[in-house]
Amino acid sequence: MPSFHEIQFPLRLALGTSGGPWRRTDIVALSNGRESRNQRWKDARRRYDAGSGIRSVSDLYEVVTFFEARAGQLYGFRFADPVDFQSCGPEAMPAASDQWLGVGDGARTRFQLVKHYADAGGSTERLIAKPQAGSVVVSVGGLTLGDGDFVVDPASGVVVLDAAPIHGAPVRAGFRFDVPVRFDTDRIEVDLDAFSAGRIPSIPLIEVKP
Image (cartoon, rainbow, N blue to C red; front, top):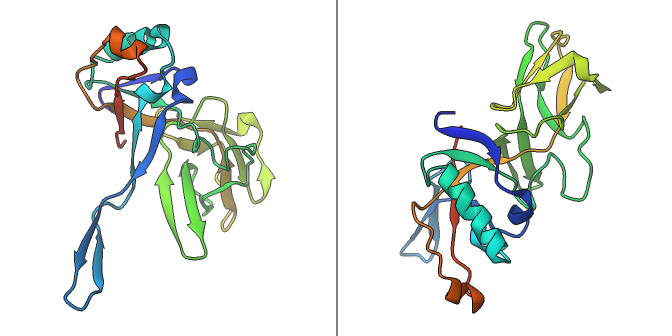
C-alpha cells in the first residue's frame, strides 16, 4: 500500500475511541409509499474519532506527535478497532477454524485473510490486509498447521502455505488484525482552556482501502 506506515496508533488511546463501519445507501421514496434502495458501496468504510480516547494533556501530546510523524493525512497507519479486532468475537480467543479462506486444489498455496459477517438473513465478506504479527493460526482439512508450515505477509494479509492443500481440503484461519486508516484532517486545534473545561478536540480517522 503506497504512503503507508506500518505502525500502530497508540493502543491505550485507541481503546477509548468512538466509531465503526460506515456504509453508503441511496434511498428513494416512491409514490406508492414504498422505497427503492441501492447499495452505493460494496464494502463498509470505517470511521473513528481519536479525540474521544484522550483523557489528559499527555494523551493529547502523544496524538499530536503521532499526527506530525504521519504528516497529517499524507501517510496511513494501523489502528486497532476497540470492538472488531479479531476473527472471532471480542471476548473469545482466535482459533484456526474461525474464518473460511478457500478450498485446496492441489496447486494453490496463497490464500487471502478475510472475515465473514453472516446471519440467517445475509452475509458480507471483508478483506483483512493488516493482521497483527504472530496472531495468525491456520488449519487445512481441520488440522491446525505448525508455525513453520506457513508464512503471513503482515502488510497484505496473504497466507502462503509450504505445501498446497489437496483438492477439496478447506483452509481456515484465526487472527487478530488492525484497520488501515489515515487522519481525515490536516489540522489538530489544541485549546488547553477548552480541554480543561471538558471539551475534547475531534480527531477524525478514516479507513483506507488496500
